[in-house]
Length: 218
Image (cartoon, rainbow, N blue to C red; front, side, top):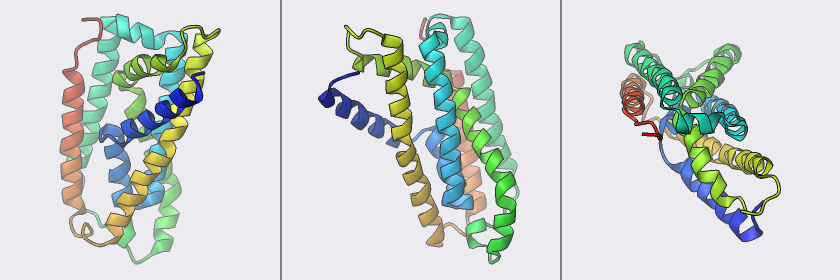
């Protein structure tokens, strides 16, 4: 593990990186705006679970395979891009619905929450798992903070990866709470269907951008 100074730098860098908007942040914010902070937090936890897959995969060499094998990277890249585009198309074609935040019946929203929570969680999970750029990120970022003389570099990688992931939870939750607060202010209550259209277009854009990403080995 790095010394205290480098550990604090690692944590600060992780927070800044998690504040950067991308598909994960968009997924959290969209669900928080539509269904409240709880849905946004659940979306963030799904993304966190997906990150754990990348961390342990990188530690056992799958991430290195993605970094060196153009075929493996391209396969996962196209699956991930298709998934993001699929989410975007679903949002573009969705019917205009009133946000549960502005519904008069809180009890009705509570009844629907359990089934919706599972779908929101798994959506966040797959949004992250199917993005090979996340695996490449961990391979590029984490080793910078592992000492050259570390006796067990794989264990150090996992510990730092887990720390990075856990530190992302409060940042993701903050995105969710802030978005839900904005929705409660009322400015977005009558334009949620337009939010779906904008978010859908952005997801399609992220999918196209991922599809056009070159393999690290090229």
